Length: 284
Image 1 (cartoon, rainbow, N blue to C red):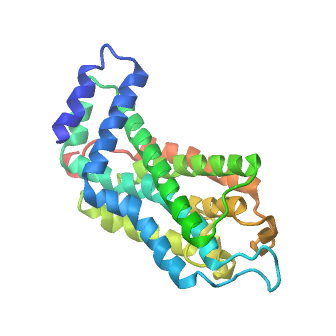
Image 2 (image 1 turned 30 degrees about the vertical axis):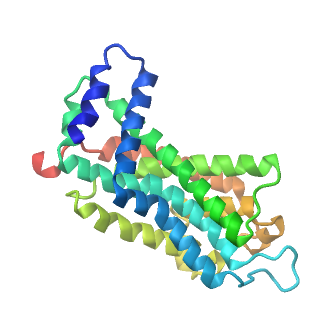
């Protein structure tokens, strides 16, 4: 299967335009993903399953001050974090796990040996991740609206905020996933290296628990990474304006959210240029 992924695009490298090459490569990457049941379940369905489990447990727990209207339940708070986690799963976790496997199997080495420009390979990964993230977000929103009374944004400004938080977060997670793919020495080591990091970030970034209830040192740790700011930005979209007073800073700090996520986009690009490897370390 790996050989067939490199050759069709490479044959068209001489005559097709750059956009058509990228779209073709993105289509190949997406077909590969959906044919792998393990990846499909872990990346797309696992966040939905977690939402259903935690939502069922904490569905009736109200976390706003008594008498405040509209009230916010812990399940609604949790949903915003799971949407951010779904974006992280399709970008960071997916690429940081699958690229080392492809490297071990020699797929990346064969890609590099074809006439296909190297940027097409990365463009295909990015397009595939974007499609998966869109599907993941739609699934999570559908479940949240159907079962947990989550209200969709009712203004153009909130939809715009939802858009730029999601896009910046996805770019940052995707670039970090490509860069982090060089850490795992083998394809088998990928899940063991990546999954604990993702879980730590989820537990410390206000996904499973209220962020302002976490210990200060944990809050400071989480603030170094994109997931915390993605969660915070999405809370401004799906939770009432009055809930901003429950944030650690007393507001949603959208300007700071944009600044941190943009910084991670730049930093992720630098890490990609420095840390990405086409061959395993034992091959040199």
